[in-house]
Every structure is written in structure tokens, then in C-alpha cells.
Length: 249
Image 1 (cartoon, one colour):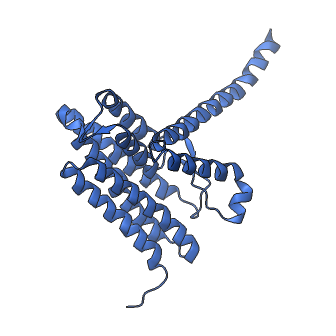
Image 2 (image 1 turned 135 degrees about the vertical axis):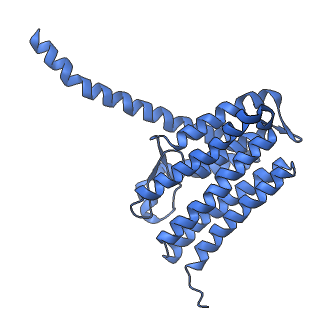
Image 3 (image 1 turned 180 degrees about the horizontal axis):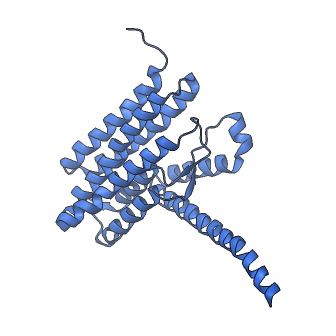
């Protein structure tokens, strides 16, 4: 068997998928903290497979498809099963439906991304990326996990956060991609590079507890920016009509 350099990014993608499976097994064993950490590990491998594909110049349609299949396991099925086992099981059928939103909406988001993909490098995503959504939910869990249960106050926010995250994944809200740290990307997006490094610094100094709040800030910033753009577009579209009506008067 001939082993080519295209195997390198695919290996990281497979490790991503394997970490998703390990997360599911840990959730079934009620080891929720470990289940969260395996999703974080999957996210690290997910970011590395893209970096390796660019480094080895082996980006391909196959890579896109296997990456999406891995993502639906690690960032769709794994967090959905985690929130069900952790808390939503108590709501029976409603709990199943709500927890499955992370998987279902994530799958729709990935399918939309694949059919709209033009080229392999993007400056932004339309809708919240599924790894980002999963990390948002599991960092919330890690922040407020007490033993094997969520803090009772924090638990009240779990369902609204799941619904918000799921809807944002299939929305048209734009979110920036991770910086690539290439010369051209540094020149083109210096603020994104600075923001990313600042976020990593905060996470390190807070020993991980700041990750949820950083992700929350990014999510809300994208949402507010989208609402502002919508408002400006509506104002622009309605302005000609106002001008015409003033002339009639």
C-alpha cells in the first residue's frame, strides 16, 4: 500500500472522530467531565487536520466529507448525548427532542456548508460552526459541573443555551473563521489574530474557566453585528419610498 502525505490530515480527522466516540462512552458511564474533555480534544484534532491539509497541500473533497462525518459524531452526537445523560433525561420525550437539536441542526449546518463550499479556505462561516457550538455547551457544563451534576442555578440555563446554539448553527449569522497565521492572513486580519491570542491568554490565566465567557462574547458579538446589518439594510431599502412619498406631498 502506498502511503501519501494526504494521509496526514485524514489521520487527525480520524482522531477527531475517535475522541467523539470516547466522549459518548464516558457520558454513558456518567463521567461527564471526561466526556467534555474528549470533545475538547476532538476540537483540537479538528483544527489540526485543516492546518495539516494546508501545510501538505492536500485539501480535497474527500477531506471535506470525512471531516463533516467526524464533526457530526464529535460535535453533534457526543454533546447531544452528554446533555441528555447529564440533565435532560428527566424531561423524558421533551428531553430527547431538545438534546437532539445539537445533532440535528448541526447535521443540517454541515450539509449546507458542504453544498455551498467554494474553495477550501473561508474568511467566515454562515451560521455558527458546529465545533464552536459544541465547545460553547461543554465549556458551560465544565464551568458549572459539581461532581456529576450541574449547579441547580446553571441548569436552568442549559435548555435555553441548547436552543440558542442550535438555531444559530442554521442561521445566516456570519462568524469569523479561526486565524491561519499565514503572512497574508496576518496582514489581512490583524485584529482577528490579536483577538485570538488575547482569548488564548485569558483561557490560560483563568485555567480554562474563561473559555465559556469568551465563546459567549463571540456568539453575542456576531449576533449583534448581524442585527445591526439587518437594520441598516432595512433603512436603506425603505429610504427611496420615503423620498417618493415626500415628493408627492
